[in-house]
Image 1 (tube, rainbow, N blue to C red):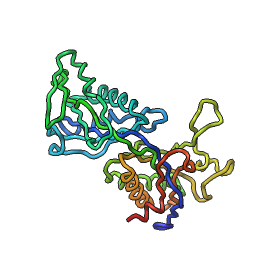
Image 2: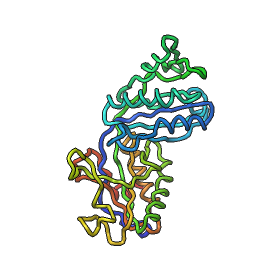
Image 3: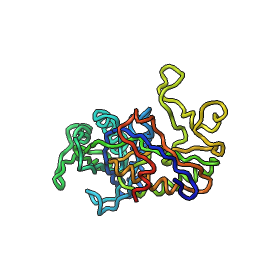
Length: 297
């Protein structure tokens, strides 16, 4: 298969099961909603070392939020239910409650379970916190120095998909990065997915294992252009730069659609091949076959 002269390799991305949550932060204006969301989704690129993977979704108008103020969507992904409670509790408490004028609400209603966040953060009120119900949802009003921090009692969590991906193999670093930017721009229009790495792009793709004891992940030597002459490689001679886009989503359908639009947008001048990362089906339960996905629409 070729698109715009770019080879689409007949392979698949291997993804795994994660737990996903969707939150909304609101504030006095969009500027402060984004400041809070940026803080909360920071240092959340990879589950390998960050404890969770996260990113911002759509900006929301006052008509789209529970408290009638500007807001921002946020998606979070962890490996377990216990991890999700810890990460949300820490990040809402340290990044949203601390941010001026902010409030935080659940935005996932088709969930497998709920994890208590506001129900625990309320104790920061030292006995002066108060509960209220709004549209049938229990919220906590926690006194803070600029007024009140409004936070929902609990947040929905559901089985989700982590580690969807595709690889952009290009003639140069500039061509690879340009194609990556085009792909991310298109993928941002897909709901319920995030690309958690910086700007949505990762250059340090990894493989499992290492020659060093205790190092369970290491550089993906098969896709490192500088190692083409020294070890086994998956790169044609014409490829001198590779970028990877990793996708987390609340559903298989959302990840597949993000992959589809991203790959199509990435077929830019200077790109030689689009591929995907997998471990032969041994890592995760989800497989996203590039040819199948691109033939869906």
